[in-house]
Length: 325
Image (cartoon, rainbow, N blue to C red; front, top):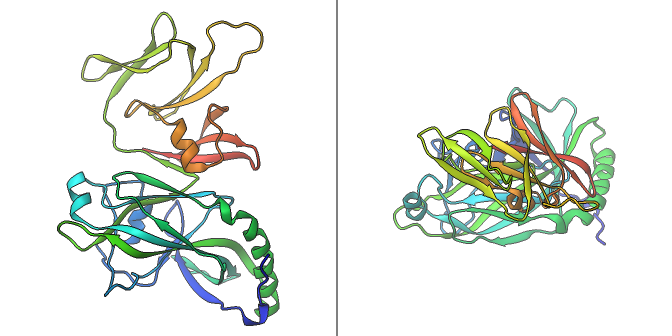
C-alpha cells in the first residue's frame, strides 16, 4: 500500500484538446501537422499519428483522457492504410504507459480544451508491442485497486493545496514511445488508432449485403449480395438461430442461438454479426472491453447518431460500447 507525500507532490499542468466527440487529448509538441494526434481517434485505420525518436530519446508524450472504469487500451501500432505502408514506416516497439490523477479546476477551460492539475500515479507499465498488422489490446485492470486509493489522496491534496472549486476529476493516460520497429523506407513512427474498452472499430467493408435470410432448418444465416449471388454469413448445425435485432444503419445484426431441442430450460446465446464483412465479433468484444461476457444479452442503442451496443457486466451494471465501421 503506497502513500502520497502530499507536501511534496509534483503537480503537472496537462492541457487537453476537447474538439472530438470520442475523447480529449494532448501532446507536448506537434511533430507533423499532416499527421496530427487527432487521427488516432477518428475510427479510420487509413489515417495515423506520426512521431519520431530524436537521437534515441522518447518522442513527445501523448496524453489521453480515460473513460470511467476502463480496463483496456487498444492500439493499431503502425500505418494501417496498406500492408506496404505498414512495413515501409516504423511502428512502436516499446511503450511506457503512465496514469495521472487529473483535476480540472472550475473555470479552467477554453473554446477548444481544458487544463488539468495532475499528479502521476507512482507505477508505470512497459508494453512490448508485437510487429503485426492488427489491433493489440493492453490490459489495464492491474491498476484498478491502487487507483481507488490514489484518487482519494489526489483529491485531498488538491483541496488542501489549491483552494479552488473542482469541475471534474478524471484519469489521463500518458503514452511514451521508447523504441521502434524500423520501417524499410521511412523513419516515421506511426500509430493508426487508439481506443479504450468503450469502442469497437472494424475494418472497411468487404461485402455489400442486400438482404439476409435463414435456411429452412434455421441453422444458417444467408446473405443476398448487391452484386448478385449469395454467401453464408453464419452456420451452426447444432443450434437454432433466430434474428434478434438489426441496427438502424443495417450494418450490424444480433442473432439468438439456442439448442435445437427445447427440453427443460435452455440457454440463449446472443451473437453480434458485422454485416459489412460477415464476421462474428463477440470475441473482439471480450478482448477490447475485458468486462463483456461472451453470449450474454445485448441490444442496440443510438444516441446523437452514434450506434452503441449495450451489455451488462458483473461489476458495473449496464455498459455501452460504440460500434464503429
